[in-house]
Amino acid sequence: PTQQERFSFQAEVVQLLDLMIHSLYSNKEIFLRELISNASDAIDRLRFAKLTDPGLDESDEPLQIRVSFDKDARTITISDNGIGMSRQEVMDNIGTIAKSGTREFLKALTGDQRKDATLIGQFGVGFYSAFIIADRVTLTTRRAGLPAAEGVRWESDGRGEYALETIERPARGTEIVLHLREGEDELLNDFRLRTIIRKYSDHISLPILMPDENTESAEGTESGDAPGETVVNRASALWARPKSEIGEQEYSEFYKHVAHDYADPLAHLHAKMEGTYEYTLLLFIPAHAPFDLWMPESRHGVKLHVQRVFIMDDTGQLMPNYLRFVRGVIDSSDLPLNVSREILQSSRVVDSIRSSAVKRVLKLLKDLAEKEPDKYATFWGEFGAVLKEGIAEDYSNRDDIARLLRFTTTKSSTDTPDTSLADYVARMQEGQEKIYYLIAPTLAAAKSSPHLEIFREKGIEVLLLSDPVDNWVVTSLPDFDGKRLQSVAQGASDLGALEDAAEKEANEKAGTELAALVERLKKALGDRVRDVRTTNRLTTSPACIVAGEPDIEMNLIRRMQGSGM
Ligand code: ADP
Ligand code: MG
Image 1 (spheres, protein in one colour):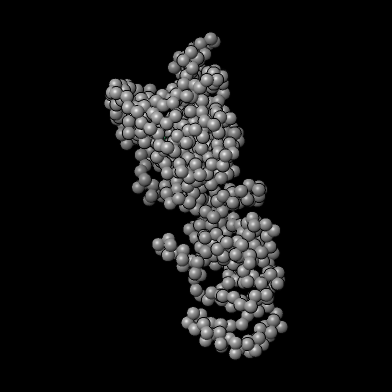
Image 2 (cartoon, rainbow, N blue to C red; image 1 turned 180 degrees about the vertical axis):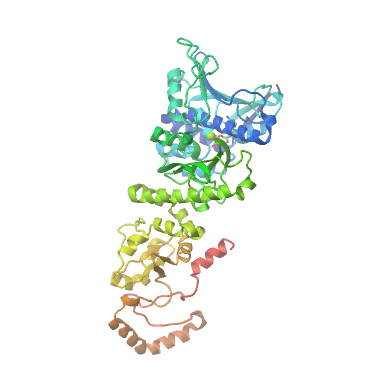
């Protein structure tokens, strides 16, 4: 072994560790779920790497996770024979928080324990949860494919520094020893640990082994386990099991594992498809937006499996951008196990899976909107602005997406977007042919716009749009249910049949009476306006500015310039 070296944690890590220990204590069992989840990810990655590099298969030991404890030493040990880590990987993954989200994470903290706990998993700081119950953590690991002499030992008390050493480690994979804090001895209990594993990790598709209690039946080897050990979890891919056998709690724990989330999902869909292609979908709608939803590199959340083997995270082939919040698993029986990203991009199988998965998700949202409006309102608040992108992005499903949109209107009693286009159409007035909307930078600006005066007076509902994406929505959605969408701020105030003959006459009369004023204004404003005219659309304001009918609205132009289009 080489000499031990000492390193400091990043300042953020220290802050995070401190917070974790104090705010997550009431939830301390999660350390085991986090460490098992990492072990499972490491084995998935080994399996995938082996497809292209069979040399990584150094032993024929089955892929598995082990959990054990030592009452005298007061330790709990979690080990896996997954991909392991090189020295550099340990430094990158365990000593620092490589992910860009740390600062956002710290900013997002609320001080409310329960809320903060739900944030922690999202930011990928799961490993540090070990320090909730341990005052010293020792991790030994060796990366698959590296020689035994390149093992690594990492140790820390979680107080700002860690020690790193190169060691001899014949076995590939990672072992983590938790030296328990004072007062945590209740965890040194076989039944307690098994209960935690079953509660949080039953869905993990790899066997999680624990040594048998040596008191009773030490040779309890029901399913051919190594003598003296039993598999604690169910160890089968959750999505491959029949729906009828799976409880809500299991779906929920599985979701938390794949989504790296702490909160329960809002809804899920689980379907086995058997047509031209055979595949299984297990997809979830989260209850809250991930911190990176609006970041350019925000991750997609669906994991592609082939015959239960994890292949890769979606990078846009499985879910379109406007459904990037969907989390879960798609497992195909028709793709080759050594499928590459390039193959995925031009695969007919993938195209077919994607298009049916998208339809299923839209259907799931439709059902949620109809049957559980409260949950749908939560969904809309978190992800509505993302779903709206679909109107422009996904022509083939535009109509279904349009039905899922929710708006605040001049008739909404609160600012919450609660009106669908179908609701709007159902409330349209006699003689009304168009769906009217107003775009403004904020809802408050929209509400006080003079453009609304005539519509208010006539009791005509107007959609109030203030999301930056709303311009895309209205330009990509010319009509709904046969009704054109019409901006109240554009062109002549064309109320069509809603305007009665007397009003038309009054307008014309005003035109003649005010002709001289209009001329003077035109002269004064010169090139700065295209036209000046009288209108009956104002009831209390003397004047307003209107965009020309065929113009793309200024907001949209600015947006396109901003996005480099
Ligand atoms: P996350 O799992 O969300 O990436 P964690 O804090 O749980 O965040 O883990 C950080 C990183 O440390 C992992 O992404 C992985 O690269 C590495 N890691 C943790 N545990 C293991 C393990 N048992 N085997 C290999 N790598 C691991
Ligand atoms: Mg993790």
